[in-house]
Amino acid sequence: MQIGESKIRILLVEDERKLARSLERQLARLGYEVELAFDGVEAWEQAQNREFALIILDLNLPKKSGFEVLEQFRAQSYGTPVLILSARDKVEDRIKGLQIGADDYLVKPFDFGELTARLEAILRRGGVKRMAILQAGDLTMDVLKRTVKRGDKEITLTPREFALLEYFLRNKNQLLTRKRLAEQVWGYTFDTGTNIVDVYIRYLRKAIDEGFSRKLIHTVYAQGFMLKDEA
Ligand code: CA
Image 1 (cartoon, rainbow, N blue to C red):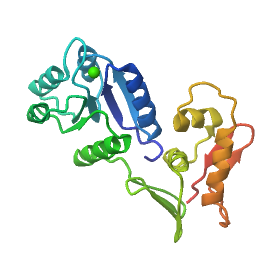
Image 2 (tube, rainbow, N blue to C red):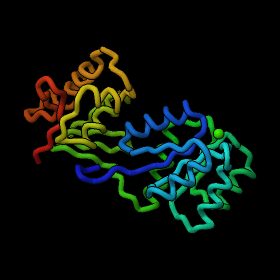
Image 3 (cartoon, rainbow, N blue to C red):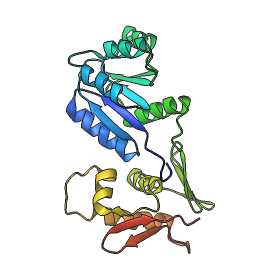
């Protein structure tokens, strides 16, 4: 995502609050804007009020089931793509879900990587351009292939370093405070008093800036960090 481009908004309908919050955090970390609905009625209301690029829909929901919500959407020609995320693993349920207009169906328990791959596939089909190739200067990240290159040099990162760099690239030329990085990349919503952000910045600098005359990651004194792309 480039500066100024608005984030892709996802509606997550899930009544298991712990799971909902954890998914919200993980998706936010990838740069999505996530709104939550905890029952079928709320899902319907939220979808009326705002536009979403994608809806992740649980089936067993209070007040109104996911099937009912989906039927209601489609009856009103509401075209937003829907990915069903449900513990219901019967073939009949999957068929029904797809028949009444879901774009995909993923059974719980699921792997978060698979969920993001599937939702990115749906968003691609839907023509929403969430940039899969991120760049700053001579550094390139392929978000889908999970590769990073600086010039001709392939760079290997741990998943956390990758997430941190992805967040920098999606918010380049912006001051990112330690607090914001801790929230967005680690999911910390409170001050943990750790220096984990600084530790990882150090790892990341070693991986992407060491040996290059132009540094990408800059310290903003007493405030935080910035990935500068002056190209
Ligand atoms: Ca449920």
